[in-house]
Amino acid sequence: MSRVASGARRPEGLLLHAMRAPSWVYRRNLGFLLGKRFLYLAHQGRLSGLRRETVLQVARLDHETGEVVVIAAWGNRADWVRNVRAGHLRFAEPDHRFLPAEECRSLLVAYREARPFGWRLLTTVFPLPADPKNDDLGLVRAVAFRPHMPPGID
Image (cartoon, rainbow, N blue to C red):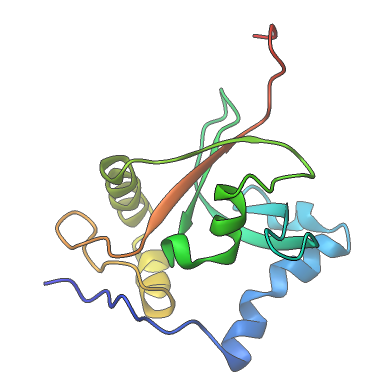
């Protein structure tokens, strides 16, 4: 049985402030200090139309294609996911795709195997399955972003 609860609580208080620290780093043009482990995503609020920003941890980076895959632990409940689904990427215009469940599962398994300590830490904060190979994924989704290529450019 999975320990992922569909009603998992979002971080709050000190933990929430710590999780927002990478945004502070990017807003001060110091994102390079974080290396390639994070993705800065600017998007447009689907209701407000205002610029929104979030920093996401990179789960997979394909150096050949430039595709970056991130995990949405709260799935479609995450505001950034809802804005992307609504087509509100107005600032950098990357191409994106939502990974099918089995590709998401294999991504999580690979991440857990590559970073076991990091995975244990993430599962204490986010509603991720303790054993992504066998447990229900719950709300977890994965989104891949790739630099936009205008038609005719290979």
